[in-house]
Image 1 (tube, one colour):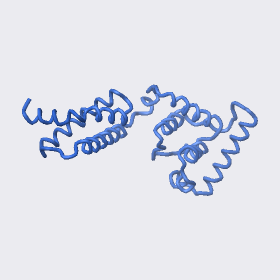
Image 2 (cartoon, rainbow, N blue to C red; image 1 turned 90 degrees about the vertical axis):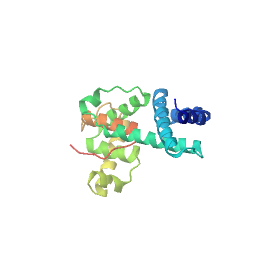
Image 3 (cartoon, rainbow, N blue to C red; image 1 turned 60 degrees about the horizontal axis):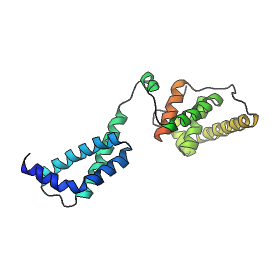
Length: 193
């Protein structure tokens, strides 16, 4: 090990535990945190090689950690799995079952278009104008569809029926909206059947 690496190691040592804690907080997983720490340390060492001493190491580490984490998230979003592969991927998150149950329940009672608009409005808090822009329709159409779908759900609740014929969402749409709820992002490729 060269003298610069030894100096960097002694310089960074007091900040390692804080870095580990911050990485674990961001990633939510011990394994992902370890990977993130390694990437940040590599970037920090490269920076140290170029500049020498680092004036505010904790500030630099936080900024590097945040940037590396954002880069990792962007790389993960670029990969789009085929629908068949995505449907086969298991989720270990308990909230997945609740989100999936909600979307399946909506698919039993509403048409696909009604469910799309209701999810965008009630779950993702889109304004009527935003929904109209996303789905390429008018605001009055959005109002009408939301009114009709809410009325249908009220009637369903009052009648306590388990199934009302009308419309059903495709398996792809059920999976799409479940993942959208889990990721808190409805995405940009909305479509109607």
